[in-house]
Length: 426
Ligand code: HEM
Image (tube, rainbow, N blue to C red; front, side):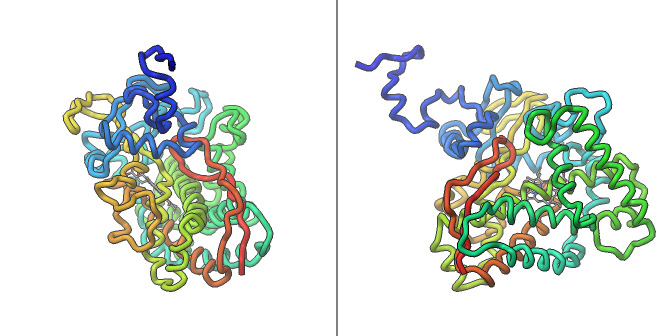
């Protein structure tokens, strides 16, 4: 006969349950990156939506936190910035960006981790650079680079889509955005990873290494800004920041902080959406057939990829006062985590939410870009990049066959891939 475990439950009966039901509710801790790495976090989130949509994890390595998992509750938190602050940190860890109190750490005051009025001023200053009119000027450059990258790929041989295409195209995008020397573009990738990295992660060797790299990056960008003073007509973001009335007087620190935010914001997120689009089309081949039959569906396919993938899994806020959500009392100072991945799979909003469906009604109704005053500034640029990539794919290939399981990022905040073996068919 099966023995009961220490909580009095039958071990065999417990093992027969799907993984997400084996723990008591209060033990569920979605800050554990391994759940995301194994791609089971979505199943735990589905359980929370059903059983405890405003869930307290009382004990995690980051301290206690609330999980908000329903679409409209997430909107409520994201839209109420007075009550739910972004100041200091929007991830679990309060100290990530302080680099372990390392004395010479470069300070990167970044408006994503701030509230009004600082946030309002900084965002207003940077947003013209990413406005539709400006990003349109970058379109031809992005297309040319995409064509070149796709034309150089092998046909009928297995290669890694992440490294050969997704990393390459997003790095090229950053080089185009900043008009950064093209041959040195992998520096941008390195700096972007260093700035969110920590010693031992495979990129950063020590806090000193990180600090030196960030200082080097800061010096490069400040030099570029000086070189571009007086060249107001250029469409790249550095020239805009060097010359536009709202941005030219930024302190060096603010300028570097904003460059980093654009670099980090636009890098992994867009890259993972590109890989997701290939995986989704492979898992739902009937959708590829529909897209080929009616390429106009690209307009709704692109936002659907971004919903389906949810490249940013969550953003965190801190309650500024006691407040209630669904009868749960959230106290001033509590961490409140908005699980975008969960809101994007909310059964009350989407039919068959786990499916990839390229003609959903209201395709832009998703949470992947957040909502409210911090809504992603690069959303149109990210969509444009994905659209161009797929226009060019459809011109060249009949199918991108996925040859094995994707390898996933080991992170609780970024949902994405480190490798995806594929083979192209003409
Ligand atoms: C903010 C997602 C691409 C720049 C954000 C936020 C999310 C997000 C979730 C926070 C929203 C909130 O707190 O309400 C994404 C996704 C992308 C993407 C999923 C790609 C599919 C980009 C690109 C850029 C960019 C290409 C720029 C080059 C920013 C900036 C912010 C931001 C500057 C801060 C906005 C603020 O705090 O006011 N993004 N992003 N993002 N994103 Fe993106």
